[in-house]
Length: 186
Image 1 (cartoon, one colour):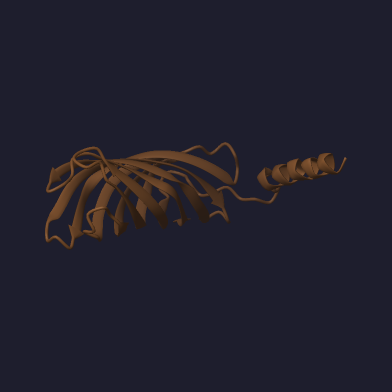
Image 2: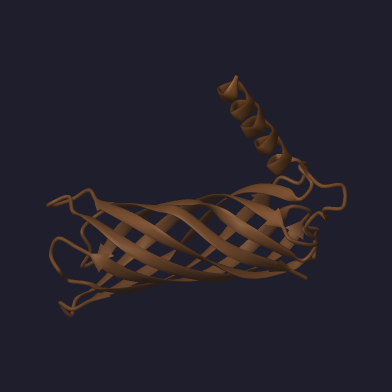
């Protein structure tokens, strides 16, 4: 009986957390809307060439966008990665930029799932004095939770494939284990 009551309470708590309040506002995602925001994440990368090393990064990614149609955004972003650990101890930083598109599904009220794609260069600076340059193809998958009509809490994951161009370790797969951020729409 005690287990059934706890399970019932858990189910009710989940339903209440996911239910949309009657007064919740939808985010402003109409054509002509501008967006500014950013995200913080932890990324894990795995190189497919050579010693097949794995590295962990902390990433900050500010960005801006413009809605060209309702729910469809063209965006530009910057990224700053700090390498936390690496098998070769050549810790460093990476700076990258991308251009892309995001599509927002607007049918759930104050909860807005989205998917996107981006493409851009990365320059990684390490203590070996070699600058690695790659071309990254990324795909974010996330959800915005409207705090009001103009501000949303952004959570999600980003998958990225980096193609080596100069002084790199070949093709690298990166996964943002999860990101959190804030997006403003005006």
